[in-house]
Image (tube, rainbow, N blue to C red):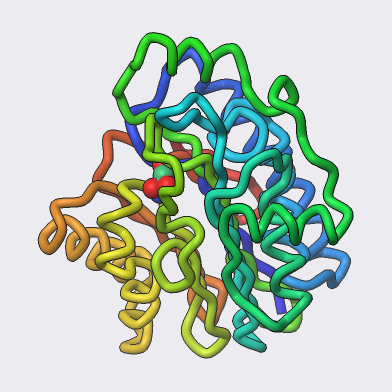
Length: 287
Ligand code: ASP
């Protein structure tokens, strides 16, 4: 089966000075994950690889370059799910971590729990051998300036990846620093299975971005994936789900989707959302 892949780099009002850097970051992450899929690697391995690349890129609000909370600290959220086994792993409000998606993977692999948060998740990270990332390693000048000037516009930058491998299996991953100036301890949709991330081989898989509180209340990715049950085109399903998000919660956001055939879809109701997918043999980036 021909593999499929779609990535997002967040929904919101984009900072124009970062457009080229974001595009470059998405291309790099896409190429890395695509290589895995072409070599018959799993969809789960591909979404993890894409997400790690984007977490390491400081122009995105995930891992390095995450936004700061009310107290000027970084607390990250991430989750991932495998559509064939329904295995899932998630972490919320975790400090001092460079690659939250790898900690979510460790939770998935350990198998006993699905969702670890805060101090317990940090202790689990140390036990698993994750190094404690230092503040200078994670906090960028840009995010620090933003926090110092209490700039409130919703810059995008959450990252997400959805893949289908050559075996026809699906996986999805999402990672974020959350929303700017959030309350310490706040966990958003990106860590919540069914809201920010979901995968089911029989229907489809998706990753969301936008107003986390609204996306949780609308269980956005699961809602969109349920719509695929009627054989709807993924673009149409994503559109209906985003309209539902807006109608019922007044929330703004978007999501990327793959259906069980590997067809891509996405929709958003924010001024912009960055997306990367394949059209024929060409990687298309939409901002
Ligand atoms: N959904 C993320 C959150 O609420 C933020 C975003 O996607 O921009 O934490």
